[in-house]
Length: 225
Image (cartoon, one colour):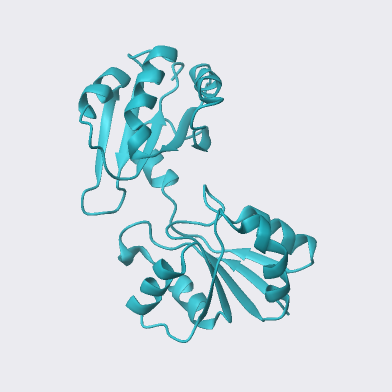
């Protein structure tokens, strides 16, 4: 019986890979990859060879989903991976999972790496109720999203790219207020991992350099907490 397994991969430190992830990658007939080059490096590191890897990413997911569902149906086990973390969380995955379920294919998602939960916990902000957004809109709609964040009673978690981080912080100070507390987690689990905790104004000063690099998770504390 055909099965699609969503497989988390490490977000930086390869030591975070799980035994079930390795077992699934070894047993998979086909692996759908965000970037086949990245996945092949991962497979090579763990001495997994002879796998059929097919590209499935943000630029082809609408075009390829129907074709790949047919491939899933023709095999016993298909694994879906992204470059890092859990597919479907700010990476392709939703469309093929939805299509697989509609086609009567068994779908399973393994527990594993994702940036948002570790970042939220180590922020030190309340975790009993939180709101995850993903990446902010590049331009249109960004201000309206930030205005929503300003009035939320929950801790807010979202992602931002390095080249937009400074502009986002400046816009947050304008809309939400520079005194609001924020945590910014950089390069989670990697060599240069760093967590900033302080006000938005302090974050602007801390990340004031023009050449900002890395991957960032931002955690905004609710004003009510």
